[in-house]
Image 1 (spheres, one colour):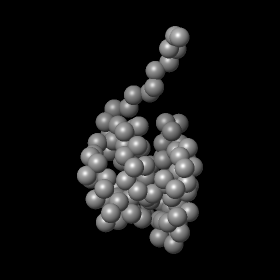
Image 2 (cartoon, rainbow, N blue to C red):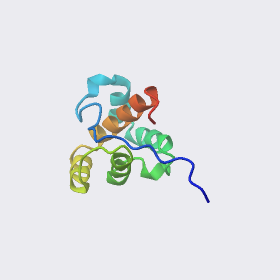
Image 3 (cartoon, one colour):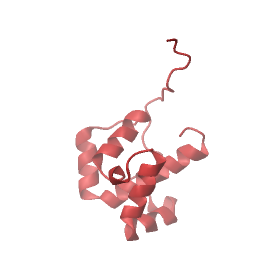
Image 4 (cartoon, rainbow, N blue to C red):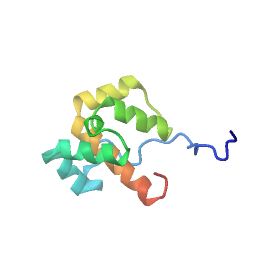
Length: 104
């Protein structure tokens, strides 16, 4: 079997918006505030994961690994534990930005 293409490698780069960047996309912030499970399902769908996996440390870890975003499992856990809705909103904003830039 011959490999014809390699997975795209990304330079290390942080998330494109901050953890508390709700004003960057108010619609995502509202969804994360008033219907967090819906936002989780959207994130899981975007990443071709099970809807149950849309929120939490594992999906954030997968996303960070895929796009070479610096961080640790401990950091992922703490961010999700103390501010799950902010973490989910940040992840969705980053996904949308990557979609617009053709990187997703």
